[in-house]
Image (cartoon, rainbow, N blue to C red):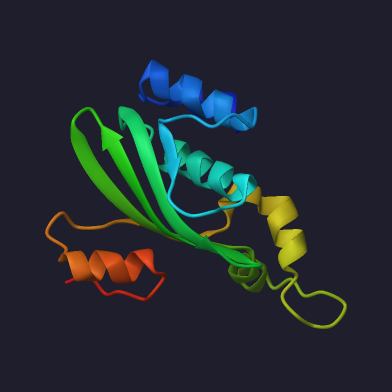
Amino acid sequence: MDIEDLLGASLATDEFKVAVRAYWEHKDTPAIQVVRHSPRVKVQRLLTQLLSAEPGLEVDAVVVDAVSGCSDYRGTLRVEARGASKVFNFVWDCQWRAREEGWTDYFGFPDQIRAAREFGWRCFARWDEAPESAPADLLLQAEAGSSVQWA
């Protein structure tokens, strides 16, 4: 599915849909806040995942707090949806996807370039909602990319 198909199937607000389209046109928007520098393509993959995985959310705005590595992008996505707030922990990792597919490059390493090219946004190794009762220190650990086990 492309972004227009996902937007059409989503219950996100019309204002958020306009913001997503603007973001795709390399325009910043208050409805999509990125706390620290992130490559635009990785934020686009994250927004695509949100719209695909959570089409029933009436999204008003999002705040991305993530770190970007060579083969990964990990952190939290805070979603404001009609007065409610949800936090999703995520890890997008094309190296993980390459290992899952059994793809290796010429040197025998996981072929993360092929995985990123062929799977694009579908390289999420982790996508889960943080429990509302999660202590703030656990949320901070998750936002920093640490492995956190929710009780």
